[in-house]
Length: 533
Image 1 (cartoon, rainbow, N blue to C red):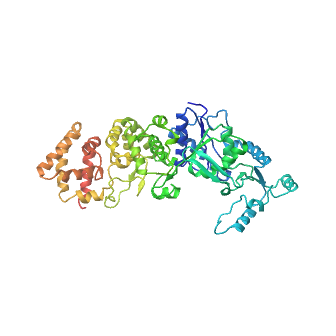
Image 2: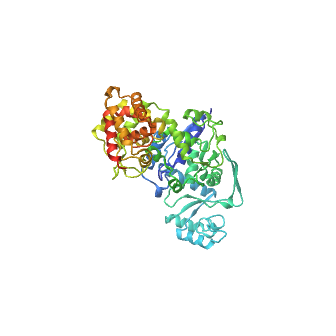
Image 3: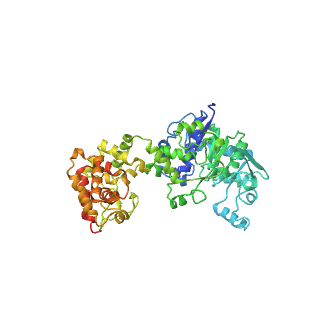
């Protein structure tokens, strides 16, 4: 494989890293590793007005979390640095002036008010958004319309100006896209792009092309939203006399309801939009990476579960689709469940202990009648749940490695994310303060208290060391046979009393883990609270 392959991920630090940006970084990384090339991280911070403090840190943390580690970048510079465009500022003006001298760009001294006046004057129903372009440029104050003397005077007086790209008239600009095939644009459709802003900073377009050339980038792999900028970049490469890198524009990530997955649509559909959201909500990084890889790319077969190594081995640009890929959040949770279950109980127990140490445990405040809203599994993100400090007893539980590993084993097949262990298994850490209303309505009958009393009488005579799941099940069967009732007539009330829920992991193993004293206390409490329900 050729080591000349160099790709870059070039985000702007104007906010948190979007999951679409993470996918772009991933595709660049996979391509570089497959081809034995170099993956570069470049921070494009030329837009100082939109710069967000700590955004660069978020980008770096998100990439590290996802296992997408740059070979070169701000944290590990190579021979083509610096890797922040704000630190390369002096380079761009030189190149822009080179274009002016060659007649491919020009100085424009127009004020914002003059530009707005031009747009207002040219605005028609057929042209609702006039641009500064081939026709309108000749009505403006720029070095194409002013005399040499006037231009010299304005420059010597340090009047504010921008440098604009001079789009040619009547040309078709075309290139071969590695994803989309032949692409072409008519030059009349393009505006005279600003290359150097009034503050002396370059725009994305100039800095992008200059840096890609100086950093010897061989392939530009980026989102479809940049496709309309490609003809301007092709022109710049041509005017500089440079070979353009091969381009590949990735398909959009689509909302399940249609259209691009915007922040507004994501919020409406309950889809986390930024990589930080997934980090803070304890998604498995391998699951998100695996899921994103398949949003627009195929390994060439029907495999869905792929390690990073397997993705690298299978990756190629010709397997990226042209059409948008729908973000199926339920599918992502399926991936997450797989990666959680692939971990050992011991590993998950340690992660759960660390999680609890950081955020505490979910706790529902008791209400008047002790009945919940009927949800089988309370959601730690809704209702009147708080995250209090741990009691001394809870601290003992969470530091009991054997106990925590058993909790993980019992719940592992029932959770989608790490916090779900605490959500659906909160009864392992504290007695239920309320009971599932639907379960109570269905399973708690007039005869229930006497059936529970009969069962607790059987449990009372069981020695603590014999309080094991098989015996607890046997004792329950003995009671239902003696009372001549179905299994559900007693098992459901026991589950409600012990867990507060109508469904959950194996009841008898759960009771064994909680211990005799705790189980009896919970059953007696439920009888007191629910006898009048």
